Image (tube, rainbow, N blue to C red):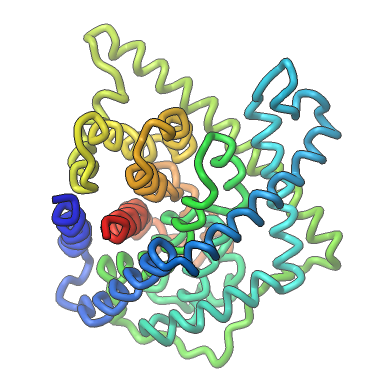
Length: 400
């Protein structure tokens, strides 16, 4: 029965995308089916094949070890406030947001040295050849395995002006459907397994192609570019300059995350205070509105409404709020349910991301501001669906 529900869920997600498509008659069914098959193959490799599971496990161990090195800098600067075992206990602002600075600096260095750029170029080239997407949009989709919605477009900023609406849609969908490696430490500190987050990141590029090319098929002539050169150095003078810039970006990101969480959690408390007068709560309302998605995941009983509440919190508020709630109950869920919920929440797609994407990307290419404003809302819906589609595929594969 769960398999039937998961298949139905995948069909529903794709059907909704088709119904809101800007050009239904031009959807390339062959392209979508090919991408779906490849996505299932990837899911089987990383979920069912022992060698694939071993790779994910080893990468998870490496990432966990790397993240732990950030504690050295945190504890040097903040002393016992940066130590979970200290009498002060766990303090999110220091022990979690502090690590964002370290990871952001590390990512800056890896890009300056060309290591991440090399990986993105090679995988992007393969995706472009396999599914007929342009090199630029393919590179951005792959970059969103590692970067955020406004970070990855920087790599190809000089090409944005020439991109078609369909290419821009893939940039928006993959950006809002992804999560930045710089803040993965924040999610793990909330109790989310790094292995599940890595699986979610792996699924982003292909799911983004599927969703975006249904929402807005490629009908305009794509500008031919002989060779894409990713702008990894971004006028950085040396590796120390890249490290410093990455650290400053991380600090800005950490402060933005902290500010957003303070505002969001406080607003939710205020809304709940008012709704409490009539015996309601925001969480309760969201759990019913989004419960059908939990049902299509094959969940039962109260887990259906838990999924609804988490998905609603992610879409209306942000993924940090949702992950915070999931982390508190994850140990009580069966592994398949926990994995599906983690993947479904792993992305930036929420209402506030609409404005972030429009303003962040239009700075790189003011000429596309109108296009971004026109496509961003649908891109957010697409980004939300990217995570759902990935979760449903992984959930279906895990049943066998």
